[in-house]
Length: 131
Image 1 (tube, rainbow, N blue to C red):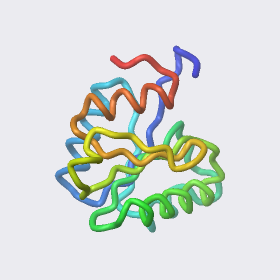
Image 2 (cartoon, one colour):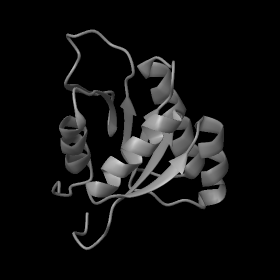
Image 3 (cartoon, rainbow, N blue to C red):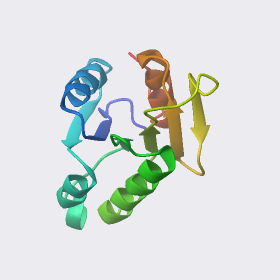
C-alpha cells in the first residue's frame, strides 16, 4: 500500500459501546474508519460500488466465527471489493486467545487478547507500519 494513503477500514460492528471504542482505537492507529451497524446496513452502504475500503473488519454479536466470516464475504462480494476480511471472534476458549487464524486467502479470524494483536494483524494485511 502507498505510504501516503490513509488506509480505510470498513467496520461492521453491532454493539454501540464496542463500535465507539474500536473506531476510536483504529483512528488513533492512523486508519480512516467507515461504519456499518450490521450486515444489512453494510450491504446497503456498499451497493453498486459506492464504498471504497482497504479492509473489512466484522464483529457480529452472537455469531459464530464461521457465520460472521460468511457475512463478511457476502458484504465484500456485494461491494465488489477484493480486500482482506478480518472477523473478530467474540467467544472462544483460552487455547485460541491471542491467535490469528487464516481462513483462506485474505480472510482471517482473530481471537484478540488485546488491541496490540489487532494492530499487528491489520498492519500486516494493509502493508502499513503500525503507529
